[in-house]
Amino acid sequence: MAGRTLFDKLWDAHVVRDLGDGWALLHIDRHLMHDLGGGPGFAEIAARGLELHDPGLTFATPDHAVSSQPGRVATTFPLGGRLHAALRDGAKSAGVQFFDLGAPGQGIVHVMAPELGIVLPGLSVVCTDSHTCTNGGIGALAFGIGSSESVHVLATQTLRQQKPRRMRIRCEGTLASGVTAKDLALHIIGRLGAAAGVGHAVEFAGPAIEALEVEARLTLCNLAVELGARFGLVAPDERTIAWVAGRPWAPEGAAFEAAAAYWRKLTTDPDAVFDSEETIDASQVAPTVTWGTSPEHAIAIDAAVPDPATLGPRAQEGAAALAYMGLQPNAPIAGTPVDWVFIGSCANSRLSDLRAAAQIARGRKVASGVKAWVVPGSEIVKRAAEAEGLHRLFTEAGFEWREPGCSMCVAANGEQVPPGQRSVSTSNRNFVGRQGPGARTHLASPAVAAAAAIAGCIIDPRALR
Ligand SMILES: CC(C)[C@H](C(=O)O)[C@@H](O)C(=O)O
Ligand code: SF4
Image (tube, rainbow, N blue to C red; front, top):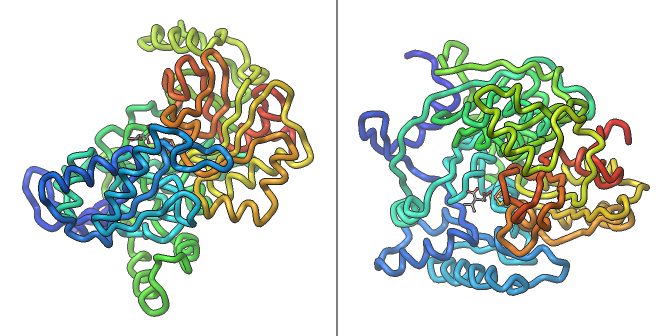
């Protein structure tokens, strides 16, 4: 048999029936539900008189539409309160585990699921959310689905899917000190373009990936969808196995050892063939920020904003992006004054991200006129950060320390960057209006965002270490 890629192995392990023409019926091991899609999904199941096939494989938590204000309750953001109630009540009547506000387990769905060991290497995972690909960072077959697909999964625990093409992005060399997985992700999207992964499952491989901590791999795979790919993957290795061990939903003892033995086989065979391959020199990656309104509008922090005239067929799009962002062509991006800093989102709200930001913020003050928020990705991240005093460090520096949720990543919870104001954000989307109507978003790593808060402008964080 010809060699198989990691993706082939994960796919083959979940095929219930081959439907021909590249289509298959897949078994779904984990179904995650959040407050935007969850309530309506449960309501449809009830309205159609259906029952959940396996409620123990579905997990729900509110994240998108909840307020992150300290002391918040479900109704602090009133519209979110209705969505929260629908998710909570739907989960309850369906017998699905619900992680409520304030409880360990609540959080951004892509942060809490791997953190609890609900998602494991080798499992198939779906959620009505495009950033479900985050979970590929530990070697799960994880992908975003639509709302009718979610109802299908609730009723059958299966899903009909067309197998995507396979792509590998090999990252050679080593990331320089102070350069993170977020910088690498933005660099890759900037080089290959936001559509490079369309129709593909992308495996990130090579020495620079093997050297990444597990949480950094989650960040990298989180941005696979910003490359156009529904799936991002990193092969599980000893680092992954150690990271998963001891998590509340992970198997224990002999069952864990048996699982780990299987996870060790989840690698691309040396003779496997990809439909497309790219190579990135990780040593050339600098701290990276976006200048425009697509994640592909990414440049090194010491570079200049491009002149749209040099963008060929993209000239018009580039000019519109610059006008929206209020930037001048050929001006250095560093030194651009900022109004807001958001450290959070499923891209960069894990403990390692908060530590990286804290390292920059320690003993310094947020520049006057800048509003800076730190929003931990989950209740567990929040408590762990507080246990090591990060909340105090941030508040003493002038950052706001908030409650877990999507918050200012998406203007769906009343938390927005005001029109015309400029934000440096550790999230993954800088689309027009993403952080609020007229908001100008620069995507960056936690270190770059924290440095911007301190300096009051975009600045290379390595200058502050
Ligand atoms: C609301 C949800 C459907 C959406 C997604 O699919 O990613 C959101 O999480 C986002 O980041 O834009
Ligand atoms: S944090 Fe942002 S990107 Fe992630 S799930 Fe929430 S809205 Fe989507």
